[in-house]
Length: 370
Image (cartoon, rainbow, N blue to C red; front, side, top):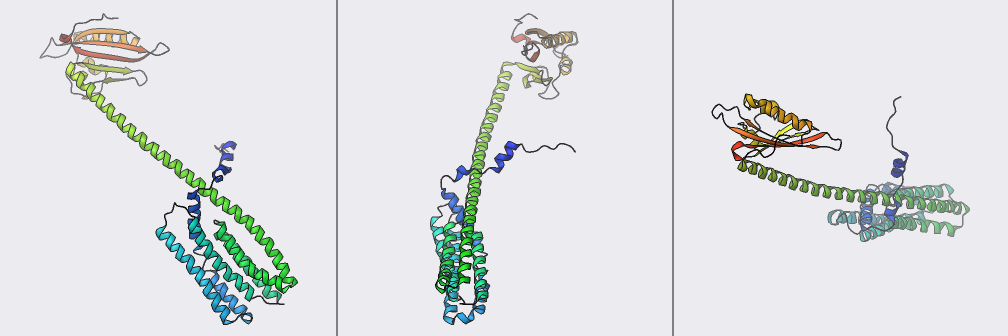
């Protein structure tokens, strides 16, 4: 089997480790996003217990009056509608990134209202001497508590408000009745409450850390985007300055009748300026820059002179100068002067060549051929 590139142990450890330092200080943005998760996640589950509520009315009808049923129904509806009203207000008017304390308090109040509904149901429906119905109450209580933990653990005050208001009335009734079966179930229920509270704390911490990491990544992405924008702006400015410099250089060469050429060892390519083309009698960029194209525009008797000039510079001559005539039938005496120099790298090899050509009538040769 071919070896596959994998994640190094150090990188894997970094990916597995949570950056706990993000939780050292409470961030208002983290709190706000937790509240948003709370309102979003709890919406679908607030109506699910309603069939359970009516099922309790049927199962425990011997222990309830119509006043109990009407009162509990109105109380649960009031708590549920209150939470929906707050959710609509939050969704329509509250900015996402803002302090979440006030909205969290409102959800805590709604959780306490719905929790006390179930607590009072456990008080009124308590069946003395009927272990089976007591067990049904215990199972229903455990299911509601686990469901509340999954939706409210992102905001611990709301979770604890629901848990306490739901648990105190039936536990008090069980203690007052002093039935061993109810006391035993209450004991195991307290163990379950403690265990779920630990789980809720861990879930809340995990949610906080995940949100803090996302916010930090969003900030890093924003910083990168701003840096990229600054870099793009700088690049555009540099390109603009470069184009302006090239324009000024071309204008200076045109005004002074100076053409330039260069050769780079790294690319083995020759470059000609626009004015170099013009001095050879060519339109700018009308043909690839090459020694053969240069020689084609030189008088046949002077081609070896130009070729020797080029070869000496390639061989490492620090400076070389020649005079040559152009292959121009209309102006047979038209001549140019070529002046070039070579630059060597640290190993003594020619790295680049710079050269210019000017009309021979503009100046006389000043440097002898090296």
